Length: 385
Image (cartoon, rainbow, N blue to C red):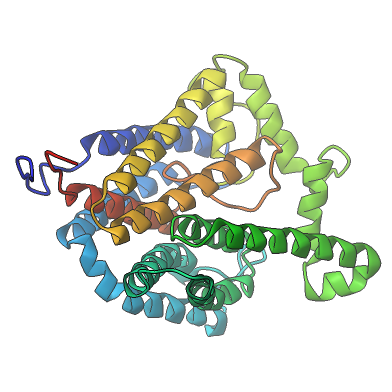
């Protein structure tokens, strides 16, 4: 029996929205502090607020449609994303400039668009639709059906992955892997198969290490560039690599100098390149200390917890898959960004969700956030469950 059916507007998770509001406040305060010592002469706070406003309209746009309608749009969104990524590869440098060694942004005057960020959301929707459709068709699952589903997912993920690696953008490709694995974990595929896939991944990494030590020139020519290897060297020994370890050393210095309560708002003094994006967590650590960073991590924990509840309570498998993909994307980006600020992970340029400055990343995160709100608002509750 359905219990007091409510409208989607009444079922919106306002607690989740409040958590987002708190993160927006933290983001603007941290970016304001970062731009005081940044290498750019620009007001990033105003730009960030503008993108948050655009993102808010995007959330409303996503909420207008029933989330089930995105199943019909999934392949159109995927195809549009692929076309944008192809455009990045073939467009002239006047439209796609080389920024920090990568061609990943369309530049339109003062505005820039990074298609790979929007592709994350399109990929979540498309893989979720594929899993839901496959499971509806094959109610009785065998090894053959599981391998067939893995093949479908691989064919979906491979084209955008290859296009992004051509930019090159290793960080975004890792996010693609993370959200894909999170969806596979809830897809019904046997754990034994997933374990084998993980084992193959470990063996592949081992093979790369062996190639590096056995055929170093081949490794540099065909697998990783010298500057990407330097990031690993700097991660392992930042004090032994003066230039490459500069970012990590300063990030550790900033966080450590904040101690328990921090130096205070706008009282940060450690210079951090790209502080408003990659190293925004270090700004929080320096100015608000261990207490501030603990509060921020707790907000992420609460947000992910609410999203997990939404995934578990959804009446439709497709809605649960959407939430799982968003959870996987956000969780990995939080872990990677904070990890590279404290030397747990190598630097990859992945932004901290909802906190780091960035137009395309903020827009993509807000759209993904809207998908979760959409699933929550259209979940029917019953008296007897």
